[in-house]
Length: 117
Picture (tube, rainbow, N blue to C red):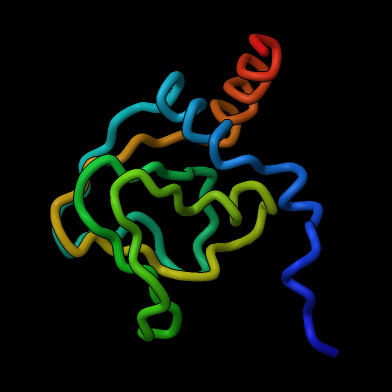
C-alpha cells in the first residue's frame, strides 16, 4: 500500500514550523558544535531539537547521507515530538551554532506563543 503524502497528517496539524521558529528565537539557548562532532546519534533518545543558525549539518542513517540542514532550518524535532529514538545521526559538516529547545522548553514556548496570539 502506497503512502499518500498529499494529505495532511496528525503531525502536520500539531506542528507548524513558523511557530517553532518563533519558539526557538524566544526560548532557545545557543549551543556551539565543532566540525565533525555530532548533535545526536541514530537510535539515541534525546529531548533536544535544533534550529541551525550557522554552519551545515549532515543527516545520515546507517552511514548513508540522507540530507543536509542549512541555516534557518529545524531538525531533530520529530523524535522529540513523537518521543521516539533518533532515526538518523546529525553531524556538523562545518562549525555550527544552533538554538536548542528541550521538550519542556518547547511546550512552554508553544503555550506562550499560542496565548500571545
